[in-house]
Image (cartoon, rainbow, N blue to C red; front, side, top):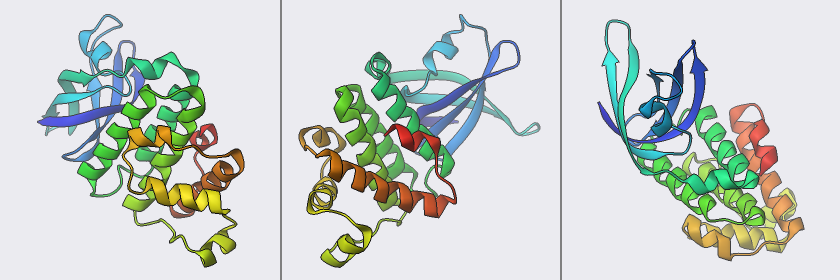
Length: 213
């Protein structure tokens, strides 16, 4: 099978292999084994946040998958250059995995995740958190969890005008544009609290990665 895929997580399996979780536009989350030691070409290609065309062999008898090849078109090496970028990218991946790829909206989820990771690669340390908050707000929208923002709900949810205005503005902005929209600290904290509470209520728990946004 061939997929348009983003590597979300990789962990060691046995002495030399790795298990990898990919977000695909075709089937959502898939898990596949990467065979080979530290010098394996595939192991280097299927690193977290890489995106490209993925080939996976499925063994129907064992119901197992292994990575056959990965043609990466976005390495996003810039994400690994800053701690803030890495932690926000990890929070994005953790969220996608926790919600099992967002149900059946895989093409939309894949595009959002890809755009956010691209924006993160170019963000400065302070802006990385805003990119993460952008992701949480749009993620809640895809899953149908987002609260309607109004004067009444703002008072109930304790959002100040700055937080509400920022959330409304980013609804129609691509991820890359969020870097140009400033947000004061108080408004950021309120918007973040709202997003985390909406998602935690739906998930039944709060993800540790959200504390890094």
